[in-house]
Length: 140
View 1 (cartoon, rainbow, N blue to C red):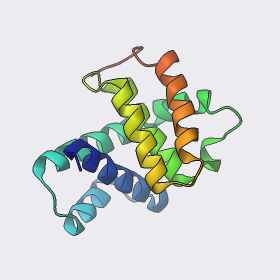
View 2 (view 1 turned 90 degrees about the vertical axis):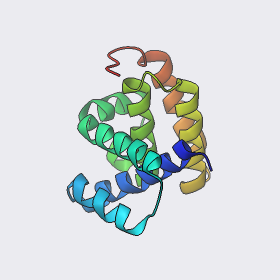
View 3 (view 1 turned 180 degrees about the vertical axis):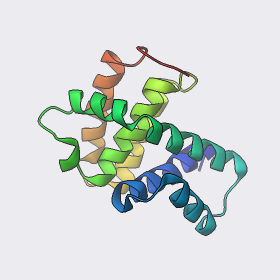
View 4 (view 1 turned 90 degrees about the horizontal axis):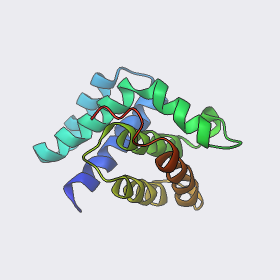
């Protein structure tokens, strides 16, 4: 598995815990690394995604809600919601990551960890976000 793919899996697991447990992100990141041995490059990218997603959750959730027709964020499956959050973070704030890569990786995560429809659901929303929002307000 590629390092960034592994990092995104780790980030999804941490974001899931943050969403469910409502504990401080720093605590959950530390707990995660106690149980998961990995390379520093994977750790660094994971933490960049998690911290960036958490810091920008309000903006990210507004964008997702705008394009998730007929879906309220709190009614989405926890996996789908957090895959969308991390990928939307990448689309809006990570200019060094090609949008196609962010979307493909998110769809793969949704297929792996979500239900049968998760991949299509995530792809549809991220494709719209990429076409309508990405490139606006990117901060790098």
